[in-house]
Image (cartoon, rainbow, N blue to C red):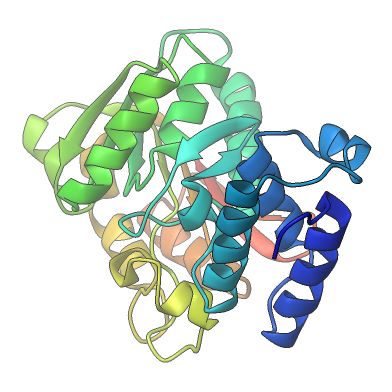
Amino acid sequence: MSNVKVYEALHWASSFLKEHHRDENAGELLMQWVLQMGRAQLFAEQRMELRADDWQRFEAAVKDHGEGRPIQHIIGYEEFYGRKFIVNKDVLIPRPETEELIVAVLKNIRAHFGDQPLKLADIGTGSGAIAITMKLENPVLDVSASDISDAALEVARKNAQQLNADIHFYKGDLLEPFIQTGDKWDIIVSNPPYIPNEETLSDVVQEHEPHNALFGGVDGLDFYRRFAQDIHRVIHKKAIIAFEIGAGQGEAVANLMQQAFPSADTEVIYDINGKDRIVMTRV
């Protein structure tokens, strides 16, 4: 197929993706990637004829996504908090909901501590999206990040380097590397695996994202239980602990934190869709 105009290619992609039960608008993102254009420029160039090699790349990418490969793995990045993060099969693709965790933590830091130098640790960092965004949004923070996966840490380090964020990386299981240092932190943030083991996910997620970053035991709460048991060992007397949670887990996770810190202020924060999304504990 040659002499294909941009709008014709997009129309074909929309129909193809609909037939394969994918998001019909994904073609736009793939076309922006192929042509290295922003959305506004793409729509201004609707009648432009595609070069043969650009059409071939676009067609292959659309078919790839039709078969279930995430768009982010095809184009190699995901946008998070206005920045591009490298992603691949070794890390969870950052979700828009997690941006709300960033907003909530930044707001609570100001309210709880005021303006002073603080240490923050992001546990299970994956792509590094949380740790790097916290450092860039609040540069006075001394930020550390950990992950059990060497491959994930490699991605996170690349992202930190590319986005010019000074992060200390540790390898290890949950809080272990921080317990071993004997240091204390002011802020602990984590988006741990919280999907119940038996839950069925879309094939795009199930077959292409790392299971050790998705599943959190029979009820999805295993990692929160481990946090509640050990987190007192790594925090100062005055601290903030913030978790992203799955919808419907707010009460259970809040209860775990209230048992661990009876005198602390623990709240469940709801996301833009009205779902419980964050548990925030102010010690």
